[in-house]
Amino acid sequence: MSKTKQADGKIHEDQLLNFLVNTLDEEVDLGLGANAEIGAEDIYEVLVGACADGTSVSELCETSEDSPHQNTILYHLREKFDLTSVEQVGNALLQKDVLEVLPEQVEVVADLHLRPYYGDKDETAGLYHSEAKRGTTAFHAYATLYARVKNKRYTLAVRRLVDGDTASSVLVEFLGLLDGLDLGVKAVYLDREFYDSKCLTLLQAHNYAYVMPIVRWGKTIKQELSEGWSRVIQHDLTGKLDGHSWTVEFPVYIDCTYQKGRYDEHGVARHGYAADAPFIDTPRDARYHYAKRFGIEASYRLSEQSIVTTTTQNPVVRLLYVVVSLLLQNVWRYLHWEYVATPRRGGRRLWSWSFEEFINMLCRAAWTALAVRRAVPANRPPDDRFHR
Image (tube, rainbow, N blue to C red):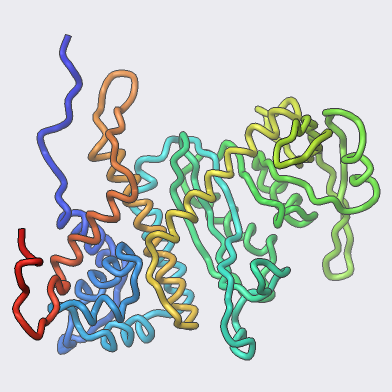
């Protein structure tokens, strides 16, 4: 019986950097003139390197002998992009290659992510304001759409949020995007920010199966969630738009469990889920399937490990950094599946290759390409303590 073995080829660190720089270069047109001091690839190399290193563009350029000057890089990042183009190109980047490895039917997750802003209160114009969280009410906010496939998460779209954006306006865009992709959607998982009459109406109009937690609005639902055992009820919400009102009705699955001292809580915990999906028959099904979306938090944690450090308030540049950070995760998952995993009968064998290792490899490749400083000047030769 022959053993499954890894292919003879190898992907080296510099090739990972090349793959990402080429991906950016193919999708993003910076419009640099023929007499420009630097090329687009020089900018992308610094951008990817700063994300992988979790440092700022300025710091990486200062410590690199072969990188362009930091002001040159930052100038092009500020002047060559606008919000609309970054969102459009960003979504194209995120979907590139990924759509090839997605199955015919996927579960998708829409989420709102708030990055706290702690700067000057007089400079919050253009930020997203919400309820107080982590000591602030101003945020750099982003909405993201993910495809979930067997515990792997691929980002399909990201957009920046500003005051005036609503959950329903975000959902309109995301459902429109899904309608335009050649994907079968098994279900849409949403967080509680999307629980309102407009979003529920949109989901029903697009005929998508969905699951989301309900918010305790009104006496009726508060009463239902304070008594009884697991059950399914019919509930409705009333919406108003331009003087017209309508009512949307939907099933609510109330799941009850004993706390048993978990989180120092005792008694019965009741959770309600607005759900309409063919694979959900019981409240336990609703809780089980909705729990799948919690994996999205892991994507945010990975993003925090691989994003450029910055103090800029320029929304275009900040969104660009978020796009590249999410792109790194997509590329890692794509390469892991397509090039590293071993095809075999019964499914591919995923060889161990963590995101942290991938990022470290990228970082070392960028350091080498940019000739990051590996030594510092000394006012005298190192003595014996520096040798072994």
